[in-house]
Image (cartoon, rainbow, N blue to C red; front, top):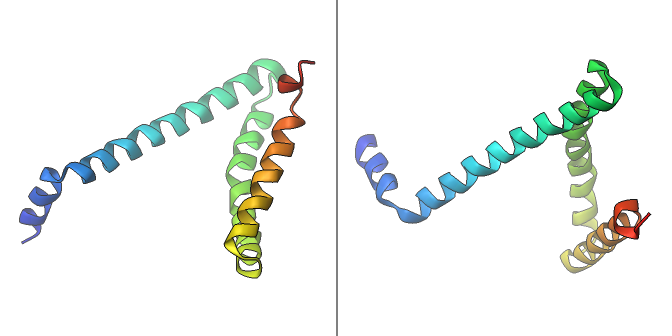
Length: 101
């Protein structure tokens, strides 16, 4: 029974597309983690700061999702999307790379 389901999934084009996209995404995330730790180590020569950057990368979404669930339940979906897009716009606008400094 399970083998026939596996064969059906293997023949399903959408599932294979989703599986390959998820695999590429996970590979990209791993390369990003490696690059971040490498750049931080290259500038600071500190393993501790490299590890702390990776810990902060994984803890920030965890804590944000805890608070984000409360915010989304309090506000409606439209207002939440508007607020998040405005915050994203402000954060990109504050980045010195995009201001030309």
